[in-house]
Image 1 (cartoon, rainbow, N blue to C red):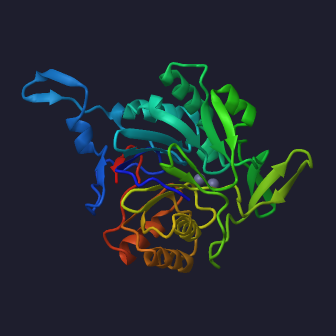
Image 2: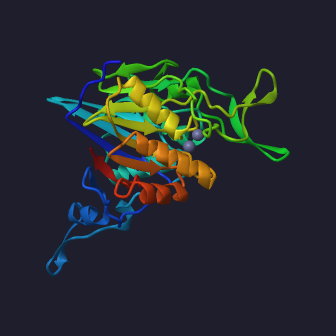
Image 3: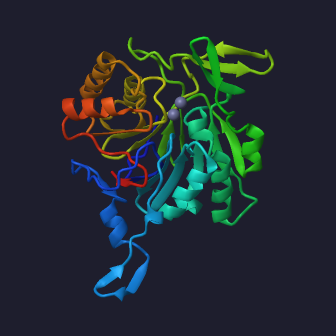
Length: 336
Ligand SMILES: [Zn+2]
Ligand SMILES: [Zn+2]
C-alpha cells in the first residue's frame, strides 16, 4: 500500500479515559503540549489587575476525561496538510466541551473514521459532524465518514446469566442527517493523498489475544443476541512519519495483532508508535507481559497506551521498556 512519508504528524487527544495535565513525558522523541505549564503560558485570559501577573489560568480551559477515545490526527508534507478525526468518544457533550476548551480547528477535518462499532467511540459522532459542518460554514458539503459496513443493531456483554446492552451506535441515517457522507469499507485503503491508511479487518494471529470476552451483538431481524467476541469490524488508522504510527481504537483484535498487521501492511517499515486503546485493562498479568514483550520485539520508539489499556499495562510497559511510555491523556497535543 502506498503511504506518504509525512514531514510532521500531530495528534490532539480530544477524549481519553485519563486526565493528567501535570506529568511531563519522559522521552524526548515526541513534543507534548497541553500540560498545565503550556496552558498557563498560552492562556488567552489576559489580566492587568494583579501586579506582575499577565495571564490567568482558568480551570474551565482544562479538558475532561471520559470512557472512550477521540483523536484529531493532522499530517503535513511540504505545503500540504490533511486532518482526520479518529473516533468521537462516548457522548456529544464531552466532545463539544473538549474541542471548545482545546480551540480545535474543526474546519480542518476532512474525513471522520470510526475505529469500530462501540458506543464509547461513536457516541459523540453525530454532534461532531454537526460541529465540523458548522465550522466549515458550508452545510451543502458532506463530511465523509469512513465506517465498517457491519453495524450491529446493538452491542452488549454477557455477564454470567445476564446480557447487558450498550446504547445503539448512530445509524447510517443519523450520520447522514448530521452532515456525514457514509463511506463503508472492510478492506485496507488509503485516504487524503495517501497521508493515512485505514486498515481492513485485522488478522488474529497470537494465541493470547482472544477478543472481547462475553461480547454479544443483537440482531433485530432475528430478535435475538449472538456471541460476538471477535469484533471483526475494528480497523486501525496509520501514518508514516519517521516510521509507522498506528492509532488503535480499542484493540479488540489485540494490540500485538494490530501492530504486526500494521508493519505487514506498511511494507515492513519500522514501527514508530502505537497510540490509543491497547485493551489490556482486564487481561491477566501473564498475557499483559506477553503482549508488552511482543510489542518490544517490534521495537517501537514510543508507546502511547490510552483509553482501555489499563494501569497494569502502563506499569508493565514502563518496567519492560523503560522510557518508551508517553502519556496519551486527554487534552494533550503530541507532535511526532
Ligand atoms: Zn470497543
Ligand atoms: Zn473502547
